[in-house]
Image 1 (cartoon, rainbow, N blue to C red):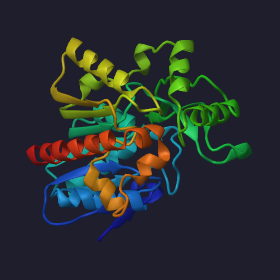
Image 2 (cartoon, helix red, strand yellow):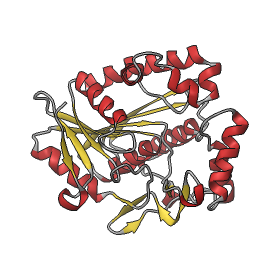
Image 3 (cartoon, helix red, strand yellow):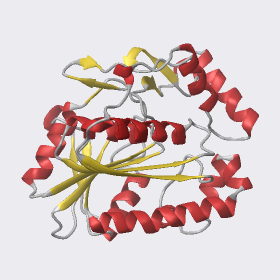
Image 4 (spheres, helix red, strand yellow):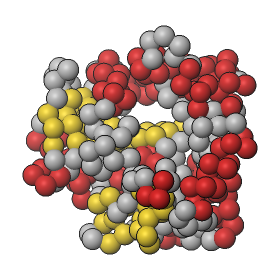
Length: 305
């Protein structure tokens, strides 16, 4: 697969361009630890099958942390895509990058399709995955996940500090029989610090079409509640966009299209979800049905775009 790498110091953003064919439509894709890892390459191939170009972005090489990520990097990426003759530019993200995609689209009106899988409706506090003190993850030191014009955006602070933060996440995951869980922590974060207007994502500023995707059994955070709040926000404010929310009872945090999961794992495509989440084991058929439904609907939405 053809690819061109970009480095922040030289190009203004860290990413990989995966061109194919003569399509004038491209999606900025944010998945995996790096813009060139296996998950991202599968995502790019999946988009190619939909007749789209793909530009993968990540904060840095092999860095899954998110802290003070400058939104201006996306302006550089959008300018590159325009230089390549792209007439339509979209963005797709999952989990933390689902949130990030919504924030980016709220700042850059050139984006006409925003797909947010398992997002929050607020800017999260920054976090690191640098292994400090043996912890798998730690909160940033008064840092947001995202910055603009040299200033961190307001964010919802986590309920816990280092090292208690990671200890609480491990405890929650073990109690629920999951490999990763943080829903109780996020609920506690909002209890201790009721969400402020400045911390909420201004989804009403997004142009084009928005697709929110989430499952009720998500144990990372209550994404369906967050998506409903974004729907309420859009319904109560003037906006120049259309939107739809695909909410499922079962699906876990991994609300990916099934054909993408199968591309990543040709044999035992449900294994990843089952290994990660108890709901993926207890409701295997229901989670598979969710991913198949997302697959059909997402392919249709991309064709209509």
